[in-house]
Structure formats: structure tokens, C-alpha cells
Length: 362
Image 1 (cartoon, rainbow, N blue to C red):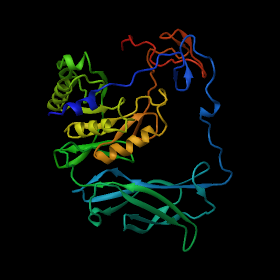
Image 2 (image 1 turned 180 degrees about the vertical axis):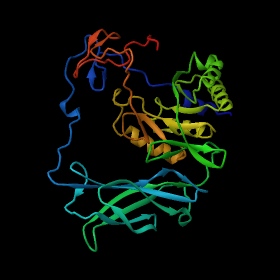
Image 3 (image 1 turned 60 degrees about the horizontal axis):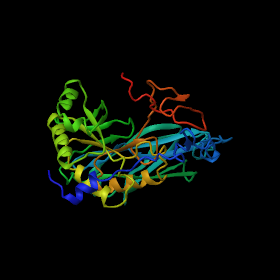
Image 4 (image 1 turned 30 degrees about the vertical axis):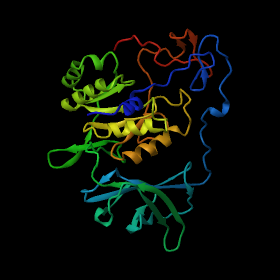
């Protein structure tokens, strides 16, 4: 695979540098010796929403698998109608069920179905031959009504039903009910859940200099590789990704230095990688709240990447704008009250006690 020098610069070019000044913050907190001790703005802390004094109906709907792809025969919509005291619209009924209708685009795909009140995860199926696959998502609207002429509850979502992948790359689906990623099962032409097993792997000076590392990973049961950028050179990136394809190792592609770049750089990167037969998922923001990336950056990137490639899920660490939200707790070899990296204490208002022992070995 070849890319132009302009594309190479976009994909592998200069990366974001970490601020080293005493004004630098992490998750809103100062953390270096000599930094101000000013506490973060109180408004930046999360607070639990007040509970309602009366019952609410949290009515939502969404496709159970995303995306569906031309060739799939049936689709299903997952509907929740949970009675609670935190989310939703006023519920003042003792009824045990509602009448459900669902419209996708201009087609009513479910009509007059019975939806149990205070239920979650109920599936309603329909034949996909009612729709024509398209590259953009359909608008989906769901309506639940109490009795004949009673209260009406509405929810909306999008429904993604795509043509076959035109980029000759892989297709990976999300089971939105269980959270599993679904990959093709070549035996029986079906889909099966993948249990991903892998970890962050340094690219420069490690993967790019010793491809036998990938053989060792494969031999030890690793099935997903997450190379950490920057990737150095066109030849190094191509060599590593080709070897991964050869071994059948899935790729979790890291865009931490480009995901918030709305220029040609991000687009070029997606166009380059979406052709890979082993692309499993995109990884955009790496601890985006820590580095104070714009709040809208992850959601904006999600929409842009989905427009350019709707055939793979998007992941990131604890933020909006993804199909898969990851946690980054650093539970091993971490002192959560004192940073051995910066030699400062860590409190709720000062300090950074993340991976403070990078030399530790498990």
C-alpha cells in the first residue's frame, strides 16, 4: 500500500506536545511543584441529579445491532420503558402495557405492538427488505401510547443500514444490547462476538524495529494490537500493519493526535486505515478531559469518522462521542495520594497520581 507524501505528512506528521509549564493542569487540577494551588472551579465537579418525587417513564429506542449491512435479512429495535425517579417523562398510570409504533425513514416497521410498562431491553424485529441500504443513517422515531387516546411518549434515534463496504476493508458490528463487538464468522456466513485481548504497545523503537513481537503476541493468545502513535514513517507503519494482517491480529487504531483536527489530516488518516481487512475499531481521545480537549471535540470527531467510515465502532476513554467508553483506572502499582513522578501530594483539588510508576512490571 502506498500513500502520497502529502498524505503521509497528514497521518504521521507533527504531533501535539504536552504542556510543561507551571500553568499546566490535568483534569482541571494543577499538579507540578511550584504550580498554583488554586482549586478547580466548583462547577466542574459532577453532582448527582435530584430525584423526582413522582414516577417517570424513561422511554428510549435504538437498533440492537449497528450497523446492519446489505445482505442482512432482519433487524431489531431495542426498546426501554423503565419506570424510575430520575430520568424521563411523568408517569401517572397503573397500566401494564403500552401500544408501540416505530418508523424508520418513511417506513412504519412496527405498528400496534405491545410494550410492557417498566421493561427494558425488549426487542422488536422487522424485515430489512422494507428499506434500501444507504450511506447515511435513517431517522428513527418511536411512539408508545397508553390505551386508546391516552398519554403518548416519544423517542428518536438513528438507524444505520449500509451498503457493502466499498473500501474493501473489514466490517465490525456492535451488539448494542450486550456491548459486544461482532465480527464475521467465516464458517456459516454469520457474525460472532469477539472477546478482545490486547494492550497499548509502543510503536517507535519497539514494534517498528522487531516484528517478531507480533509473532509472540499471536502465540500467547493476543488477538488485538493497539499501537501508540506517532508512527514515524510510511514504510514502518505499512510493515507493521501488513504483518498484523498476515497473522490475523485485529487493529485498534489510535488517533489521539489527530482526532480533534478537523482539517485534511484526520480525513486522510481515516481514508488510509479504513481499507485494512483487520481494522477492529477506532480510538480517538486518549484521556481527553485530562488534557482539556474541547468538550465538543470527541462528538464532532465521532460524526466525521462515521461519515467517512460507518463500518467500525469508535472508542475513547471516559467521554462522550463513542460507541465504546473505556475506563483508565491504573489499579496496579499506583499511589493515589502521592505522585512519585512529580513529588507532590494528590488531593481532590491538586496533583496528578495516574501511572506514577511507569517502570513497574506486572
